[in-house]
Length: 257
Image (cartoon, rainbow, N blue to C red; front, side, top):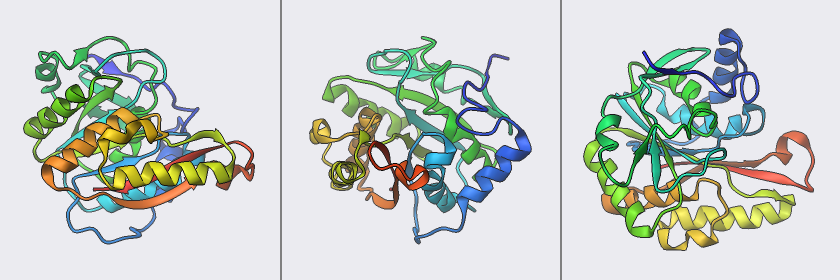
C-alpha cells in the first residue's frame, strides 16, 4: 500500500488521535443554517486554532448526510504546478486513521488537464487539514485529492465539466483562505469583495479575488453555473478574532452550495 502520511500533524492540528478528535468535535458545533441539499462546501485551511471554527461551521452541515466520494480541491503552497495535480496514493493517513483514495484518480491522470505523482501534495497542507473534519462527519467514504493551479480559463471550465461527469454524486470541498496580511479593516473590505464574486458566480473576475485557492474557486463557480447550484455564506472570521492583533490578519470564510 502506498499511503500518504501527515505533513502538518502537530503543527496545524493535534498529532494525538484523542486530542484531534476532541478538537474537531469542539469546532463542529450545531448547524447554524438550514440547507436541504448540499453539493459542496468552501472551507479555510489555516491552523485549527485560527480557522477551525469557520471550517467547522460548514462541516457541521454535513452531519447525518451520506457521501461515498469526496473531491477535495486544494491549492499549492510548496510545489509549483500547472493545471491540476491528482494524488495517486492508495490512502491518506491522519492521527484518526486511514482514508482510501478513490481508484478513479488513475483515470483522471490519463487526461491532459491533470498531472499525477509530481510530489506536489507530499508536504501540502491545504487538503490534509480537511481530512480529519471529513472523518468526523462522514462514514465509509473515499477521497479524490486535487490541487488546482493556474491555467487558462478554458482548462478550468473543462475541469469543472469533467469532475461533474465523473463524480455526479460526490461532495466537493474547496480549500482556500482569503486575504493575507492586511489590516482588519482592509481585510473586511477585500474579503467582502471576494465573497460577493463567488456568491454571484463570476469566474471571469478572479483577478479581483484575494484568495490562495482562487483557481479551485473558479472551477467550482463553473460547476455551480452548469448545475444551477447556489452558494450560501456560512461563516466569516479573521486571525485577529483569535490573536487580538488587527494590524496584519488573514481572512477566512466558509460557504455551502
